[in-house]
Amino acid sequence: MKRFSLFLVLAALLFCACDSDTVKVRGEVEGLNGTVKLLAEMPGEPGLTILAQQEVKDGKIDLRTDQFKIPGRVWVDIDGKATVEAILDTKDMIWIKGKIKFPDQIEADGSGLMDEYKEIKKMYKERFGEDIAKIDKRIEKISKKEKLTKDDEVMLGIHQLQKQRFLKKQANWTRDLIVANPRKEISLFLIKDQLVDSLDLQKKLFHKMAVENKESNIYKVLESKLK
Image (cartoon, rainbow, N blue to C red; front, top):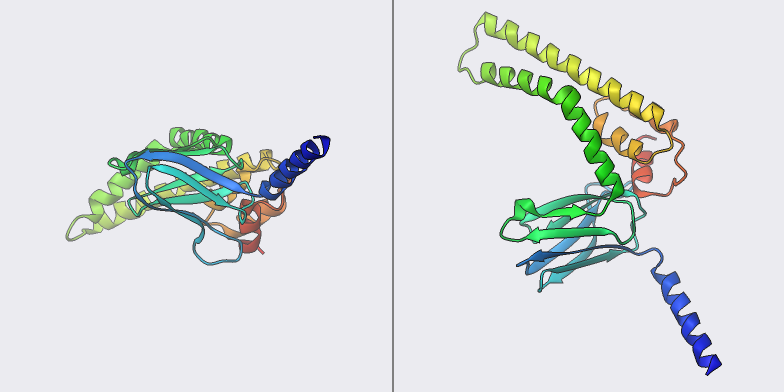
């Protein structure tokens, strides 16, 4: 009996060890019957790579991969009807939910980094969003005219300069936020997403990062891009 119990314990430990690198994205989408794919940008690879695929017949999603090192960003293709973006920061906490008849309302939940990023995006909107939106409307109004007058061309140039100033302020604010948080992994996502117009600044900030996990998907993707 003792030997049998010991065998069960060893089997359980072996199973856990084999499953330790597996990342799971699960959930339930009401009415879903079709193909679901888990995709991600992989270091040194062009475009998106399919990491897992599942034929769903009861709405229940259970995608698993051992090719992905958290944290990082993934996309879940819901039978070609919706694509859900998520930041994975745990191996089994992301939950996809919604109804297939409302594909634009299907969402992912369960990521602390994703929640943190949403709060930062709110700050972007509060600080810069309203001003940039106003300028965009002015630019759009002038651009829609069939023929531009000299005054229109002058005003268009002025509005474009105004927009560039606000975008510069936003980039500077992002830079300061990253510099103040070199050990936080959210800073890696900010470098990748919010500073795409300044490769030199991306490289400079990335090389100053002091995160512990240098094997994560987001770190390796940035490292391959900013060599």
